[in-house]
Image (cartoon, rainbow, N blue to C red):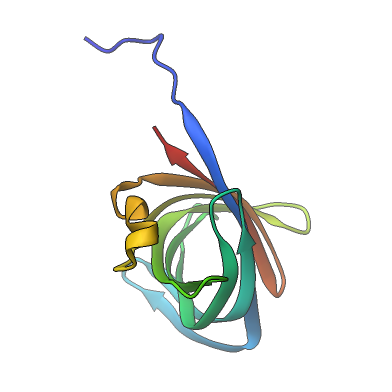
Length: 144
C-alpha cells in the first residue's frame, strides 16, 4: 500500500538559461503523435553551488504539440563547466502554454566521463521552468 505521507527531498543543482533560435526550427505537421517542432539551442549558461558554465551547440529540443494543448519535450544539451568538463544533459517533460510564457516540468539525466562530476551520472533530477520566445530558464534539483 502506498504511503501518502511520503515527501520528496531535493538539492538545488543549478539554474540554466538556454537560448533557442526561433528562426532555425523545423516543423513536421500532423504526425501520428501530433505536430513536432525541432528547435535549435544556440547557447546559454548554468550556475549553481557545485557547477557552473555554458550551454554549447549542438543542442536541441524536439517538441511534440499534443491535441489537449500541452506539449512533450525531448531535449539534448551539452554543458561545458567553467573548469573544462563536458556533460550531456538529456530530459523529457511536459509543457503547458500560459500568458506570455509556457510552464515546464522536466526529468533531467546527466552523462559525463569527468571524474570531478561523475556524481551526476547517478542523479535523477527534476526541473521547473518557463519558456518565452527565444529562451528557456530552469531551476534544476537532484532528488535524494
